[in-house]
Length: 468
Image (cartoon, rainbow, N blue to C red; front, side, top):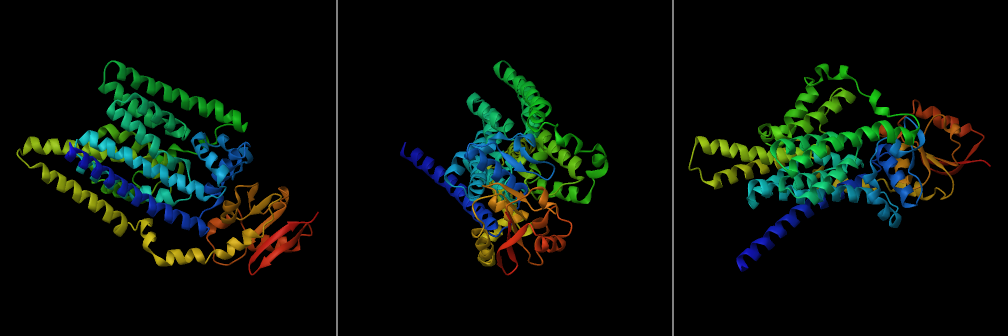
């Protein structure tokens, strides 16, 4: 009994160590990027503004590139983000979003481990699977690409998959609800796995699988064609945002092919041996091709498929092991463990040394120095009065989204802001000036606008105040 207890304690300590290391690295990198003004009103600011508004018991009204002063749920339906609102009521800083985003992905690792242990019946192999999951460059890039609702998905999705693998109904339903409340476009994931459950089971779980399929489809149709149009008063914007024309040859686009190979290589190509998990991955890739013409391993979209890919890795490894043992018997199980350990180490090295994961910033001294280099923008923000409506370029607007803020436009007079905040330095990130065709001309216009006067000026940083 004492030996069993000791092994359980060792297992928990190992799991906690892996989770803590992952969380520490990515929350540190994410926060410093935020403090370096390397996040923008898109997408960080719109979520920050919506979550902050609900924390103040107000409707989640945001500024938007397509529409403005509309409810964020009229863009995409993702009420899961409002789980953060109670904490935003206590701490209004944007850091709260990044902390929760990293926490959601970190906690998904618990369920990845439990899923792998259930499938492989081996703790050591389950830990190797977890290392492979945490090594995925797509997950790394998703975590440091501002904030996005889809990066919250790994937690409810892994809960759902754990409930499916263990046939644990409560976990299954909890995960399913979380998935559907994350975004209306992810309905295909429970539809796919619901079909899988219905095909592989009889009795109660077949009924559960079929209910998942029809319930998820009905829910998505209801949200897309009724709820979202009712909220925004127009319709679902993204139906016209895709084109089958993009998909014709895009799977053979060089960037797309490289992204597919790098993704599969990160998981040792084992998901190819798991047809049970191919559907959600292909659906994710197809949607991105329809919208953008190709896809890569950057941004947040890869967080959606990371749990499915790691499930495919566990199934694929088990299937490969079975195939080898039918051909060559009497292979010690340790050999398979060593092979999986090698894959875990390779995946980590491939991500950090070959693909140059943003995790490397954690040990980069210059990275932290860059945070100090941006303290002048903190001083600029400190001089903005707390009253009134603010308009600012997108990297500054992202920091002010706890209040009424618009991102900077050339037709600023149409919005009648009380304060306009500008950082006129040369050589800035182009995203800082999203939507502005001629930034220098805009500054010159403001300088001679009789409706605004300079409230604060320090070097290239200026705050213009509306003249009453």
